[in-house]
Length: 277
Image (cartoon, rainbow, N blue to C red; front, side, top):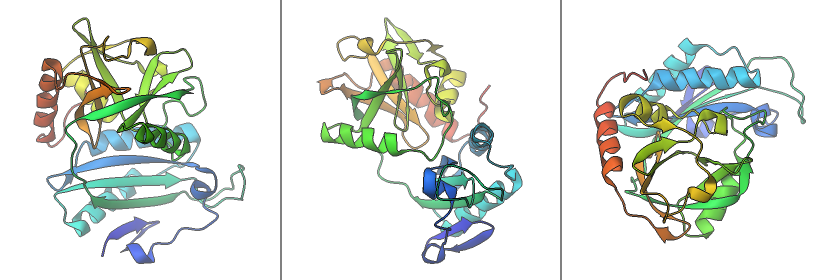
């Protein structure tokens, strides 16, 4: 039986309870992190908790005890006994009314884990017609308000793709529903800057710190199979995943740069506490 941590208790999944008035459920008022468990340990956990704290502060949720999150994550991972898994840490604004207003009270903390699915060697992507708002209130925050992502991913799936890609309101490449995007243009490895509205991905930061690359705006019109030499996605669960097609147009994969980045990341996975700097 799977165990989860819910508001101070490690309990069986079937016994897990959350109020129907929880603001995370009612209006998506919460933040979360998805952490890769690799060889029985949460990979880059400190970087994930740093981002969780920034996201929570951006929403005005908390304070949240980092010590409690550490203990909850360790307890769930130990109870599961899985060498490879997906660890999800969720913090919501806690109990609230059936509307947007909040009420004072402690946040809800949920930590759960599930086995890691089979990895995919590559991903086909589809550019969706909707845009990220790089000036929006949630820009750069990893919140539980994921309906937009769910809709975009469903659209990409209907087009035979594995991930949806967003431009921002300035018609610049932004990000995927749960991934950052890197491209090689004219021999240069580049990725959208945080000012584009993309999430500050932990894997993205590791790639930039340990392999290098340029943060610069890329027009969405240039994100085409005939224009880019290579492209790949990064995320905690994907790692470094080559893009094999953009809007059904095939792209050679993995290219030489992608192979180098993937090798760098594979080495970092074996490092207990990889530096982001």
